[in-house]
Image (tube, rainbow, N blue to C red; front, top):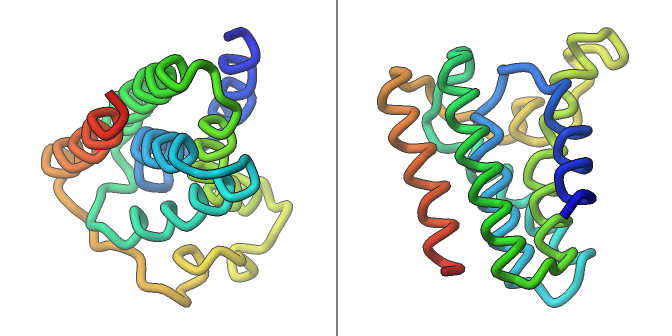
Amino acid sequence: MRMFWLLFLCLLLPLPALAMGGGPHLAVGASLGNASPNPTVALGLGMASHIVLDVLPHNDDSSWLQVISLAAGLWTTKQIYEQSQNDPKVLWGAAGGLLPDLEHLLAIRGIIKKGKKRFPTHNGTISHGKRLEAKKALILELGVTGISLRLIL
């Protein structure tokens, strides 16, 4: 269990609030990881789910939304991880769901140029979802997170 929290603290603490909340990305990735045959497929499914979630309307700039969404996603991911009897596929799926947003952090830090992002929903290859009012975005994000949990329990 310590490895679970260490992994997510390392991944989550530096993320800026510039994307759909990390909660749905974590929870959906974890749920898909749990259903996958191996960690490699789990990572790929998590990354694919990131595209689907980025296409949905959401709110990219509400810090309170990000905190609530992330807390719900962490709790959901923890529950899925425990229900799967600590299967590492869950962690790989969750990591795949969240990792694409590291591009935002690297761009903010100047490590990559903002116009050089590679992920399809970050570079404009696939249209990013429209901006939703914060309260509606919270309902959507918590709903997606809850559905991910419900699929497992």
